[in-house]
Length: 218
Image: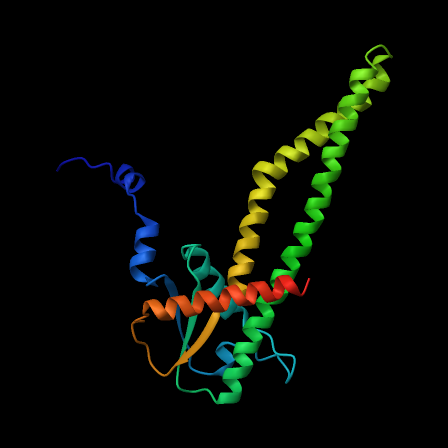
């Protein structure tokens, strides 16, 4: 029997993720996430009360995971499939999805602002500690060690923000913005989406209007 290094084969296997996602989900510049449900509680948490609805965490995780794989340049349409919802339930679901992801976007914005303040503070600290090091070269080593510590701390924090934390924050900001812009539709059964160019243009225009409205509110 021929010897096979199956582990090496597994390690060598590759896949074009972007190509697969575009093939399976994206149609005419729109990504559709199908979500089959059997009832209202599949989306709205059973612990919710009327007027204070929250999303079922399993449903929310499904949406976030699927959106995370979708190409970032495409808008998202969430197709809720199941002929078991009343018009009132559909409205509640749509409003709760929009409100939940809007709250999450707001939380990300607050965190982004906090990190921006830290970033500016570290730049100022780096400059000041550098100036102090330059003009205090003649003083004893002990006081200058404090300036060295401040200088390297500020520099290390800035590098972390630029190359690590900053990248994660920008990713979280894009994700939150996409989730807050998601469009919800309801279907009785699953059908392959057949978007026309006009459908895509209309959806893009709606998102652009929503974004302009939210910018104008601030």
